[in-house]
Amino acid sequence: MAITKRQEVRALSSDEQELVSKSHHPEVQHISDEDLRDLVKLVRERRDRARTEASRRRRELRGKAAPKGAAPSHAEEGSQLKLAVLAMAMRRLNSELERRRKMAARLTLVENAHRALELKNESAGTSGTPLNSRQAHEGMRSKPSTRRQNLIRPMELGRLRQAAKVAQAKRDNR
Image (cartoon, rainbow, N blue to C red; front, side, top):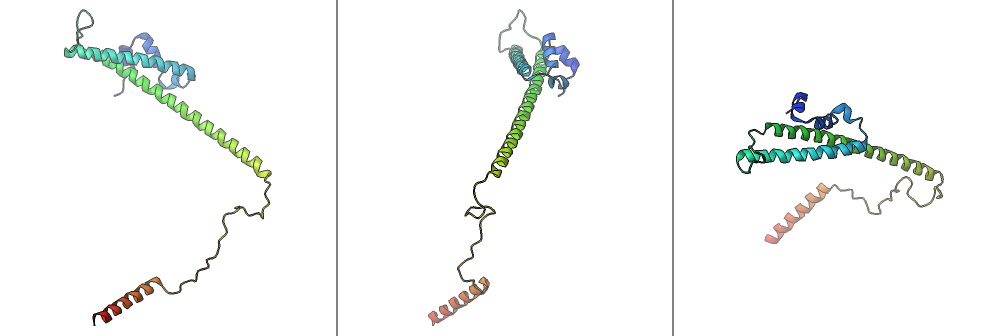
């Protein structure tokens, strides 16, 4: 379910609104990596606190826990909405962290591949082995078989063997 900006403003306090607004699309890409990690930590703390509060209110409504204040809670929609807003912000921030991690890994892989190509090109020019040595340059050479080639088709061989078996069986039964 999508949560509108109006619902976010209604569910969150002003400092929580500021944190959640940084998790939305255009702003989250302009945050540095360190600030993003700090933001994730803060939003995670707020989300955990909201989760605890929502579960406490739910238990109060069901009558399983004693009320925390002077009067028991009458509704839990606000705490559930706050939890949902903070969870969505957490999901956005985690996906941004994962996107940045994958991008860094991809860049590292490309740099390593370029470095490996440079090393290969450097070593290719200084090859000390002559071309006519016994090393695999273009693969293995084929070695012709010393076995005679059988000119009779396998199907014909099988037919003859079976005919010989039948003939021998007839002779044995006489």
